[in-house]
Length: 370
Ligand SMILES: [Mg+2]
Image (cartoon, rainbow, N blue to C red; front, side, top):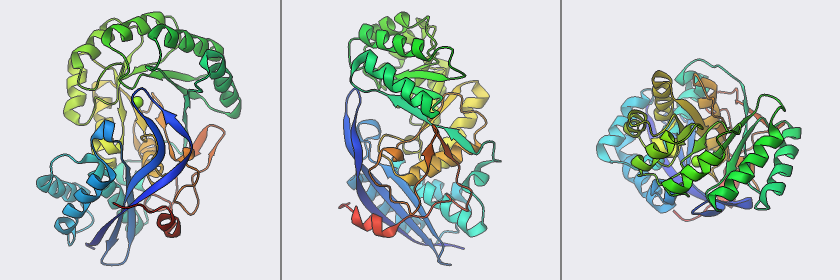
């Protein structure tokens, strides 16, 4: 069975509320979709969020990259994702987000063709119900965030990520401490913080020292993505393990951070690494190096990305640093049956491929120019 046609579309999906981070505020979900059809009429879907400040890729750029690659991949046998993506790489450097949408569509199509859930294309299934890493950040100070953490704990959440890097590091540390203390002794919980590159190394050191006696499990991307030396300096001063997110775009980045002691774990995203297969490979490398894994959608992705993350979460050996999703923040997803986020958890789809059905009427309703 061969690839007959690779089509790209784009959607702009409204979100329930804007998400504010250190250097950006995301108000809508701008995503590129891939609809891949085989010569037997099997259709697979993939998607990638535009995250220009993280990946450098816009909707228009991703669509152009996918249209450039499509004729070079059409006609290839479907089964060998490695060979297809190697060919894509031989024609086009970088553009990992655009490539990730193709990689996800391939997993969906092959799974559907063979009646296999996508996680079985990666490895054997290890889990079927995934705890959702809840983003704590009300903008209403420590008291507001503590209330939100306790409210979501009562709903069943067991994993929490505190967004920092916006305020003064000592204020952020005090808010972090209050949230950690409120959650202490309330079960086996994961509490972490993410600065999204918002600090200088000195600010980050002030933060980690002020939270050193809390139950914070890890602290993500304190400084700029390319400041490896700063990351290493913060990591050296910190009892709390340091995680790398914006600084990871390849296995080489992963090795570099490991070798220089700059991080003890990594946030794996399909849009940064080029899809499910490379994200799985990064997770396996983490396992070999003794590094921790956080798995995440970027803010403002669709249910297609959620499905891809769920299949990765089902297959990876360890996901100790939690799993983040974002399609639950959409006013309306583009799936016929959206994922059910309930009790702080979400289930791994059991059907073939990604195990979801894309609602093409909704795709048309939210279509944007690409
Ligand atoms: Mg992050």
